[in-house]
Image 1 (tube, helix red, strand yellow):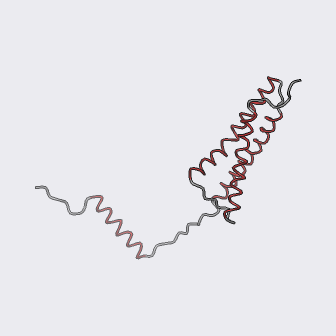
Image 2 (image 1 turned 60 degrees about the horizontal axis):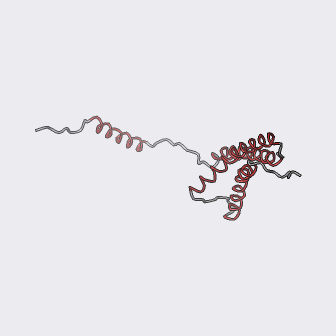
Image 3 (image 1 turned 90 degrees about the vertical axis):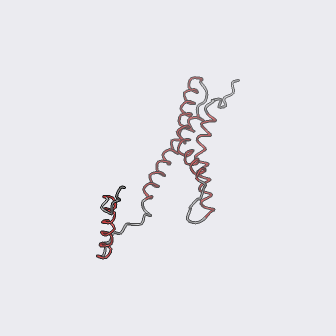
Length: 149
């Protein structure tokens, strides 16, 4: 009797690529809850860049591996439920990734300090004007010129 277990060579890599972003999100959530109430996580730059890269790239690799697994399972008449589950969960992850990115980009400008412009006093204006005149004189060479021997 033929063993009906999943023998697709793309299933395990697709599953790993599907679980990478989930594990990273759980890790970052646990660390942010543990560190402080503000949710600020201080990671070294290299580690933070690697985690962001993996979160952004792994779902797309999982989609490619899942589709390849579905095609391979169809050709070999094998069960395809594992690759189908990976594909569905990866598409959910990608949609959540886009929601997270759009909300973080939207909230990025919330905490900026507004720029307040003010007019200059007459003394400040005169000081700036005299500095500008000195700069112009230095650039144009209107100062004392050297004589050649």
